Image 1: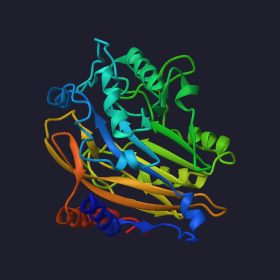
Image 2: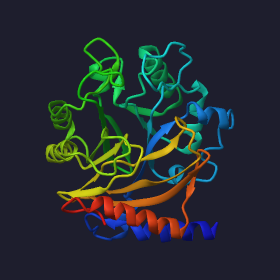
Image 3: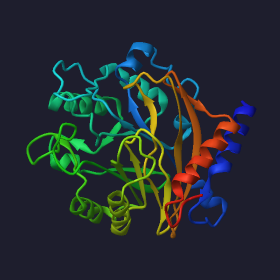
Image 4: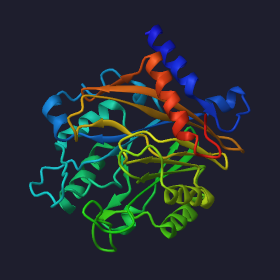
Length: 335
């Protein structure tokens, strides 16, 4: 156990940076809230064939998410027994009992604003929400109507109130079924929605964390439109932005002393047959004080046969070099 802790410290210290210095007293240290974020999670297809009913297998070698105060993943499949999928190239569906994988892994909240949560229509989405509600896993970014899809999740930890918002897509298409006034779907990434949603809660919470499912697949650099939207979202009052969808890592920008992680890549992605990947877990530490501060750390991981674990020192250095390269396009980054 001592060796594992030491290894985590070395890898995190290598990549971590303070975005705003903390005051450093013991009282404030006690009020730090740690939140872990990962990239894409899909418990369908190849994952199901390999893992079966071994619910504890995926997180058997990774305790970081369980140890965090909060942990969030992008759940990119409905948990449903629905039989009729939508007409699109890739359609994902996971067993309803895979909520056990999430619970064992320590997942507290999932993003549902993505291009696969509606693969089995309203039935699949609403069944997923009902399952998550029944086991105490929070969800954001989709719902039975537009009001629910845009509704923030607000969680209080150690006296700190943290709001989560999530958005996907700009218009309906094969992968995007936006919620309407009286129909289920996801929350669209309209700047007007984002401005309104942040404005309603900015004075009621300490931190606002926004998730975007966006970007081009396999691209290591965000598009200009993404950077513009990210900056406007920070301007509206968000404290951090967490992105995914490209299935690869992108850079992490520092803008107005806030965090923008454009893509966290894949985490446990059973949608393809690839049995080895490398990625990161983004861990944020939120400090409760009169001058809120965020410390950002990147924890390098490897995912072998859909089971993540810590990456060794040599692999972490190479991954860190890549992240620095991807982040070099920004005026400021966390590196």
